[in-house]
Amino acid sequence: MCGIIGYIGKKPATPFLISGLKRLEYRGYDSAGICVLENGALEIIKEEGPIKMLEAELANKILNSTIGIAHTRWATHGRPNKINAHPHFDCQKKIAVVHNGIIENFQALKVLLESEGHKIISETDTEIIAHLIEKFYVDNLEKAVTETIKCLEGTFGLAVMCATEHKIIVARRGSPLILGIGENETFVASDASAIIEHTQQVIYLKDNEIAILSEDGYSLKNINGELLTGETQEIKWTIDEIEKGGFKHFMLKEIFEQPKTIANTLRGRVNNGSIKLSVNLDPKKVDKIIITACGTSWHSALIGKYLIEKIVGLPVEVDYASEFRYRNPIIGPNNLLIVISQSGETADTLAALKEATNCETLGIVNIVGSTISREVKSGIYLHAGPEIGVASTKAFTSQVTSLILLALYFEEQISGEVDRELINELESIPQKIQSILDNAKEIKAISQNFIGSHNSLYLGRGINFPVALEGALKLKEVSYIHAEGYPAAEMKHGPIALIDENMFVVFVVNHGPIFEKVISNIQEVRARGGRIITITDMDNEVIKKLSDYVIMVPSVSEELSPLVNIIPLQLLAYYVADLNGVNVDKPRNLAKSVTVE
Image 1 (cartoon, rainbow, N blue to C red):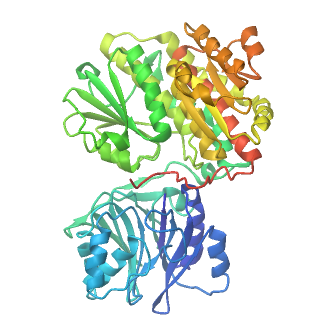
Image 2: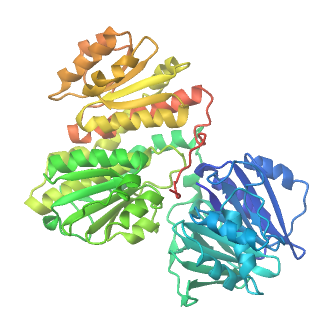
Image 3: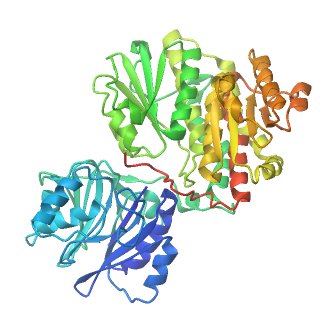
C-alpha cells in the first residue's frame, strides 16, 4: 500500500527519496510527496498522480538538504488529491509527518485538537499525528513522538522531521518499517526494495519501537525509552532481481520465473525421497489445521486444504483472515494455525495470527524478517525472490509448492511413510511449467479474442476449483474484465443464467474420476452459445469438439495439477490486459501489500 522512504547522511537527500519512491510504485499509490530540511525550514513538495508529476515540480527547485522523508499515498481517509497527499505539516509548519496505516481514533483526536485551536486542513488521519506532535513538542522531537504514539489507536509506520532538529524519528506499530544501514548514512523504508541499491544491511523494527536517525547513525528504543540493540540482517536478493530483465512488465517476468522459483522453494527440502522442513512442531500432536489468508494466498490455502486432507487425513478449515479475526474462532491447544502471506505484513492475516494464543502457529511467507515470520512459532520461507507485480503469480505457485511439501512432511512424520512417486514428480514440475511457457505465444493468440469482452466464468472441480478462483481473480485484477470463479457443478445454481454468445467460459479439466462430470458442464455451456476455453491435460476429441480453444498442459498427478493449470490462466490474464492497454504492473485501486484493514 502506501510507501515510505527517508534518508539522512552526507549526500543530497532528494535523489535518494525520488529513486526510493520509484521503487515503491509497485505497491500502488495515487499521490506522492517529499519533505527536506532546507536552510532551517521544512519544505514540502507533493503532487497528485504519478511520481513524474512530483519530479516535474522538483525540476524548478534547488534542494541540497542531506535529510528528508518521502511518501507514496494510497487513499484511505480522504480523496486522492494534493491536499491529502503526504507529508503533512502541523500548524506552524515545523513538524512534518509521513505515515502508513490507519489511526482508528483520529476523529476523536481531531475534535480535541480543533478545540485547542489547531487548524486541520486535510481529510486524512495522518495530519492529526503532526498536530499531536506539535501539541507535545518542547524542544525534544523524540519525546513528542513518544507521547504522541501513546495516544494513537490503530496501526502506523511513521517518519517525522522537525525544522529545529537535524534528525528523523521513526516509529512502528502494525505497519512495516526497516532501517537501512549504510556508510555514513541511514535510510528508513517501508519496503526493502526502496533501499536495496544503496545497502543490504537492514534492521526490521518491531511493534512499539522507535528509531532516532541522525548524522552520527541511529539508536533504537522501546516506547518506554529503554535502549535496544537491533539485529542487523542482510537482504539476500539483489537489485537485478527487482529489474524487469528485458520483459515488458514485472508480471510477465515473474510468470516466466516460476520454473526457477518453484525449484528454489524445493531446494534443500527434498532429500533422497524424504521431506526436510525446519518446523518447530510435532505433527503427531496436531488434530486439526486452520489456514487463514487473504486474496491469492487464500486460494492457495484452499488448495492446501485438499492436499492435507487427502494426503494426511487431518481435517482442515480455511478462513478469510478478515473474517477469522471477528468470529470468535474455536482454536484448541492441539490445533495448528497456518497463516499465508507473500509479504508477511498483511494486516488482516497478522490480526488473525494474534487470535492464536493457545496453539501452534506456522507461517508461509516470502519476505525474510517480515512481521509474520517473526511472530509465528514455525515457518516456511518461499524463497521466490522479490515479487514486484501487484498481481501475485510466482508467490502463488511457491505457496502451493510449500503446502505440498508440508502435507508430505506431515504424512512422513505421522505414518513413517511418504509417497515417493509424488515427490519425484514434484521435482519435475519446473520443467513441465517451462514447457507451457515455451508455448506462451499460443495463449497470447487466444487472448486476442477477449478484446471487447466484459464478463467471464472460470470453472473447475475438486482441487482445481481454487485454480478457477485464482484465474478469475488474475483477470479481474489486471484487465478489469468481470470474472467469477465457481465449482463447475454449481454453474446450474445461478451463473448459467449469464451465459450467452458474449460470455467466455474457462474450464479447467484434468483426467480423473470427475472428467465426465465436467464434460457435461461444458456441453451445457455450449448449448447456450457460450465461448469456451479449456485448460486440459487430455488430447480428447470430445473436448476439442466442444471447445472454441484448447490449451494443453502436461499431465501430472491430481495433487500437482494446480501448479501446471494456473500458468495458462496467468498468461491469459496478462495478455488480455496488455492487449487492452492496461498498465499491468499498476492496476487501478490495487496495492501490492495490504497493510491496513
